[in-house]
Image (cartoon, rainbow, N blue to C red):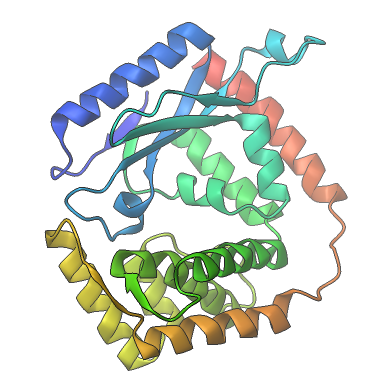
Length: 274
């Protein structure tokens, strides 16, 4: 039984289109989909009225597919249709990326918007993530993501599209959270929770609260110079993360690989049994 959690604010027609497209994937590819969620701004907690629908899913192939010398693709991509973006990763790919420090799958697992989720699968995958995620690798993921966004949108210090600020602030806040929680590897997904728990300066909080409020009611925030407090926060966190995480030696992963293999075999059996 798949659980659903869809905000009333979401367009019913779009949700029906998403459900239909996933049904098409199941039929045409012959796969099970134990996790189908919303990613992007709608899941992070700062949507605007015209935010795209970033539908993401994890799929599992029948066991005989994994025993074939001709392996199927580990991604399924459906055509981009206006605001509708529906793509997925095969379970093995998701696991491998997790062990390499890619935080995306953890964010999918924690998404509050669920179109169809096998809760046994999600709980077990989150437990695996807690046991195998390397905080240094996760931090480097956010650092590289944040620097890429910073350089793409704010490098010249001129007027910027204000909605793009979130895409540099979110990884910066995740890095600050990781530094302040040295025993944890997985930062909160929801933006408001992340900001609350990483405790940025009050002027940063004020600017971000205003932007979130304005973004929730308008289709276009417009452009303006990057607020000085935000620039200082983002640059400071990226500099601190570079010092804290970039020079850590690679960790031994033998135990983590064994746990991941056990999880993979167990979930392939579980998904098709249910």
